[in-house]
Image 1 (cartoon, rainbow, N blue to C red):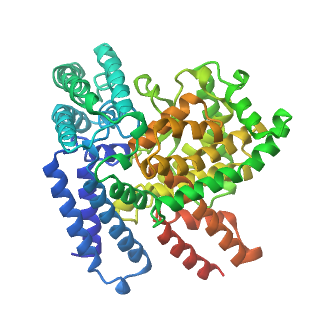
Image 2: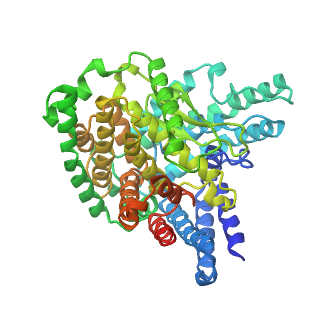
Image 3: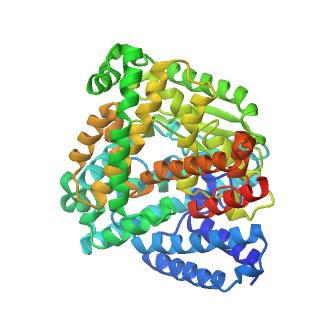
Length: 556
């Protein structure tokens, strides 16, 4: 097989493994499918990715051009990461009401599928018809995990039960799956009737079975809060090392990442002191953090204010980016309110890619739950991260690189994408986008939040910390509110290693920028550097370093 054939095979297998991810990524053609969670499918898919990695390794890199060498390196990484991820057996012990919860794509991703044609309408019904089987497989995998001593966390189980109870108590007219409008070209009354029948007769009963199994079988055996990390799960040590390697695209060990986090947290104190004096008249770091967290005058009063803040930040960034980048995406970005059922247990916000066919813009989904608990100074940094110049600029531009293989156009590498988005929080300050020192304190708080992640993620999953210790560490070293910290820690518990990618990726982008500036001297052009970073889409960190080195040799 040619490298191009192998790339197509990898993309197809990845999308078949994760068709919900295809929907989130705006990839058409998979919206009629659901994942196969069975242990047999997991074993088969793992073997397929391992065989594909062996085939890619046989392709002679010396005979390839520069672009194909990058594709080969990324295919090897991708195949090995997929195989390792499948080997971990996450469905056996992962239960969460936030990122990582098996049921969440049913309630959030499924309703976001594109519905603009009769073909889309048919695909939507076909997917909904299969959701019952998908959820029953989730129950079976949990039972297999319990039998092997691979148990979920009690906190995650309780939160999921509460979330499902709220969903199941809601009227069918407000159901996010059943309330989608029919597209033009179909019999709307008949289509909605079929959809309602499927949701009432299959999807909701399956979610109830999942919920009841959690309460009856999983909860009595679930891990307590003081054993929240997968360090306490059989096979967890290897699974965590593989997860760190996949998400950071580096060989950094858990101990190295933990030490880096401690160093970064300590290093941010000087900025808290300086900005604290300007905003609050005190350089006492603990007092600055207390004011940021506890001063109710710094909170929003309603959800409309949160949405307005996010939209205003996006508008200002869109107006400013042409001076800082040579190439920008064609797709627009919009701001939307996170669905109520999801928001209570969710993070501050997240990004959704535009549809590849242009039928849907990119979205920054914003959490407006209990606005009086949401700090005003956080939402500018959040907006720059999730929309422009962060995720939307990078990921939408990547999607539009039509000469790249599909797995690269629609792929997501956490260290690159999250590292880039975190880099742009600081870049936004260079661009003059923050409205004042209070919002810059939000930027610093977000830095300490991501530095804390390195400490608490490795603390729980490698060193055996409990959930309370992780929360207390973040309370002491970031200005996030207790509600946000609890939600964040629960996310790290459910998605080991991913949270470490942000700061690891950003530091590498910053290092490469410093190298480029030192190499080129007066000839260094920041927009050109940004274009060089983004021109190949997301890359593993070591591949990015090679590409910037090649760019520098051409630019010098």
